[in-house]
Image (cartoon, helix red, strand yellow):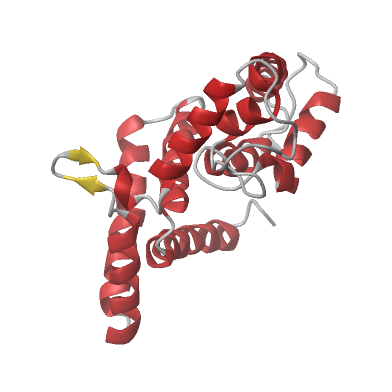
Length: 224
């Protein structure tokens, strides 16, 4: 079924819908995910024999163009909602550069997290960050969260685990195994840099556990 023309057409339609939804929701992280995913898709395309960079770029440009056309064809109340969401999505991008004050108070949260980290840089405040200024919440960045929870010691352990996971995933990808993990891993990989907490992210733990436990082989397999 996944090799049929209908499936390919449906996938293209859903890609257009995803771009429109990402813009209309006003989610900044969601749009960053769209951009990163597009770049990764181009890179994946270029790894195939006979791939064409211009063709890949034109394909993405076509998706964006169709999304813009679709927005303009929608009823005025719907298009206005999308325009309003788009303004929020790009509100932090100004002529002077990045304006952190337009990031839903991320500048204050990051500042408080960094101050707490400097006060206890070695051991942190524990998984629940008790005693920190953002106890009961999260710093909206996975690296700041790790530093708050366990300081430099926990960060080093975390980086080693992530290095092993990424290295193994690239190995699997290179030899044609488990390519479905690429888009699955992109979501928590991008979103946890800007929002939420890895502790409550089920998909983050799924990806990490699956790759860690996955058997590897240099024998090429059909793309999954």
